[in-house]
Image (cartoon, rainbow, N blue to C red; front, top):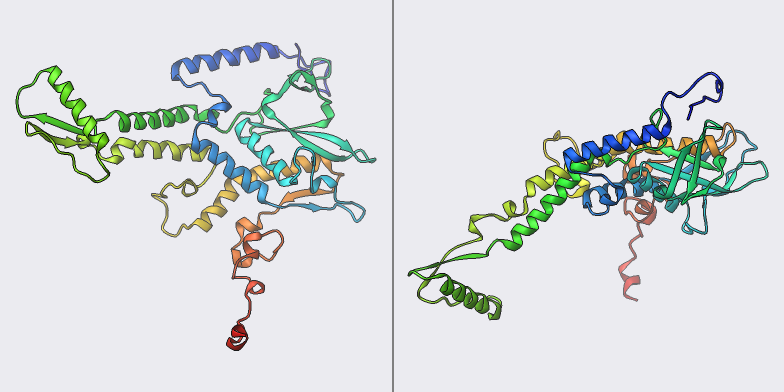
Length: 373
């Protein structure tokens, strides 16, 4: 299969077929998987709490930002999809559709939007979010463009908008934000399982026999001790035979050692960096930071370094593919970057609407006489 650029379709030739590239990529992935013993699949994210939580945090924050419309001319009108692009699948409005799209962006590596209805002008009236895991992308030799399908059913190419997390030359799909962290996810899962096994399998106590006993007698004493421990009331002491002595409990291991907390925290911090999420949002201690950092500053840093880039790429794709020239949309991050007392849009900020910092929410004190009537 030959690669033809639309403007030089008759002169440029693709040296390696797309099928060969995909086959080579699979072979390379299999080779590295055999060395690392960690094969990535987006399904793995569902079983690693840090990875799933990071994606959910980014998705809900982007979805919480109001999508503003900037008309390019006085005759431009606000499209209906700005309120609700797909009332059938996302009846709660635009925020749910944005949340689903951003979740696919980090989890699958791509967002696929599909316009379902148009205005008379040809611009989209409604659109929906296609599940990225079910969308197939191929290269058409005849047109030199991408073709799309869902479960084998072809889609109208011009109605599909693909937003890849990390677009690269020669690649048809983006990659998940957690793909390069497969080893860390595997390590965190293994550490959690090992911690559970240690806490479950380690004996709670060690008994020492004061006289020589054989294996059968040891099994009998063990069974008697277990039976006595299971029948006792809470807080009731266990009476031990005179020929036994309590040598130790938990074999000297602390709960921190048994749960492998340091290893789990290290893996959790590394996974948090995959989505740019501040670690304090994952209930992890912020260690080694500057003394003047606070949650408000870290929240703004989160937006500037991660969420802004995601929102910007999403909004630009909507503006370039769904709006007439000159009109744009953008995500308004004022509720993330401004202090609560500085937010003035009461309708878009439920937190500020309920805050006593807003003088409109402060009820005047009634006279004592009126209160007693």
